[in-house]
Image (tube, rainbow, N blue to C red; front, side, top):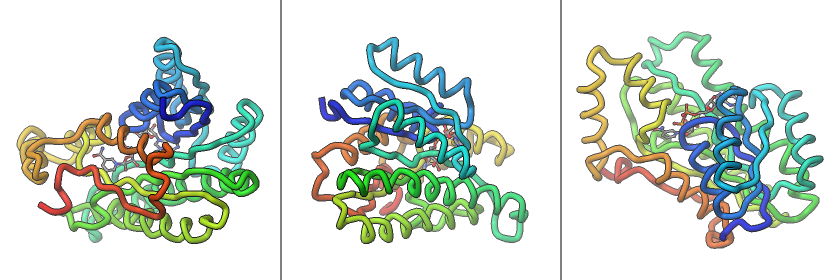
Length: 254
Ligand code: NAD
């Protein structure tokens, strides 16, 4: 068990990569605080963890809302007394080149994908600083490093998360806090299914194109990223600080 006695807060863990990570962390002994904006999805994750014999609770909060995030962190600390791991996973997609992107879409994606990393970090890190220990994992994407068509605002946010990760690492290293980033390629989750359905006339053809973009010739699975998150959350990665970890089937180098 790699996370025995650890308490992990995972944002957006009602679906996809976050859900898979919550299940894996719990199976490795962590007490998992499942966060999501969706009560139904978050509770479903908690129930699955409990059915498997794990420990979890659900705290609903929109990661873009400071008051809700502050209250979530307060309740998490009341319930478990500490947070060892913060996984800033929640994120949304945004499709379009710059000229096609509405100001409303720009603001929404920037808000969830960047402010949604800033706010949970802001309220959790003070607690980690007091304890002089902690691990923060930020969800970036391989898109931070490669140009993909019609993903202007999404690319911008994931590049920002990578830069923020490095800045946070420098600030919090003196407190024995590690801050690393995950850079997945295309992972088959509801997020990608929705993107294919809403962005292409022929989603099946687009699906085949996406597969070819990765050297692996296939899309990743949520579990592939969850295993990398587990590695970053555990002491096995204790010498990794401010690092980008690619789980992209070779998309970045292909
Ligand atoms: P998903 O849509 O399956 O899950 C995202 C979860 O986040 C959902 O349960 C949703 O309700 C929740 N969420 C959205 N906005 C929220 C908010 N404001 N507050 C709290 N929760 C919120 O998506 P996924 O594919 O599992 O993606 C998870 C993360 O991984 C995202 O940050 C995404 O950008 C990133 N990512 C995904 C891929 C991919 O191909 N799937 C690739 C690279 C990076």
